[in-house]
Amino acid sequence: MTRASDKYADFEGLREQAVALRREGLSVRQIRDRLKVFNNDILNRLLQGEPAPEWTRRPNAKDDLREKAREMRLQGMTYDQIQVELGCSKSSISLWVRDLPKPEPRFPEEERLARMNVGLARLRASQDQERRETKRIARESMGRLSDRELFIAGVTLYWAEGMKDKPYSRREALLFINSDPNVIKVYLSWLNLLGVARERLHLRVNIHETADVADAERFWSDLTGVPRADFKRATLKKHNPRTTRKNTGEAYRGCLVIYVTKSAELYRRVEGAWCGIVLGAAPADRRNV
Image 1: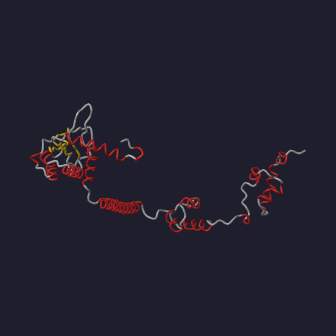
Image 2: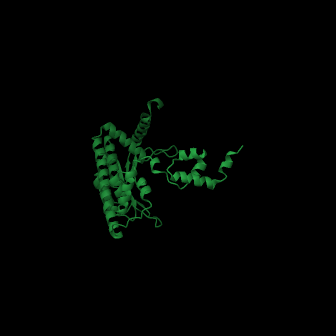
Image 3: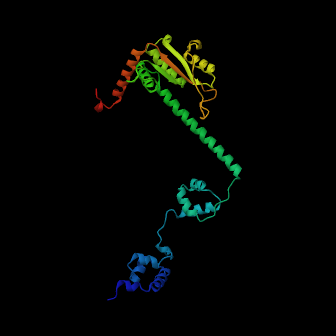
């Protein structure tokens, strides 16, 4: 009995037959049945490099797009331009035209860079407008805060930025430091809500020694309404020449330190309120009251 492998011993002879049949227009299945070759791997090797007859090809919906893409590429169009015209993906376009020569640049390098910068400027302007609009909508959605809302905001702000009491260092007093004028405004509104008179506030500027201390004090005085003459002596931070400071220039006014005298009881209320916020923010099934 002849083994199946003996049939493929004369591979080249079998390939000649397969190629001849292919060129006559037979399909792979027809060649398989004619030559009795039922091993797909060997069948593919026999027909390697031989294109399928036209009648066996299934119509491809993208054939027309492919031809149009190749024509447009030969006309010197870019992938982006072809994509806009045909509405297909750049990955498909790349596969269709990758054997074609790359078109010459439409513009000299200098003009191309100038056009790119104009486009980037337009994009950034659009992004800036989008940012401003998002912030405007969010700002207007807040409206006027109730006393309760301001109280909660102030407690949260203080617990994030203010001095806290420690078991190893008793500091039951309100001391707040920040460089953001708007944060200072909210903090002062909160103190006013709590009934803290301005006479109980001790203000001083914390700033680098190389900055304009007098100008900074004038700025914070105008913002808070506290006369500059009532400010405590500024705390000057020594400049380290080995570091590069970014908080420089006319907009740098250091930080404002606000200390409230006789505020131990008030501090305890703030700490207790903060604990209440933490408990109140927890899901109902996880509260441990």
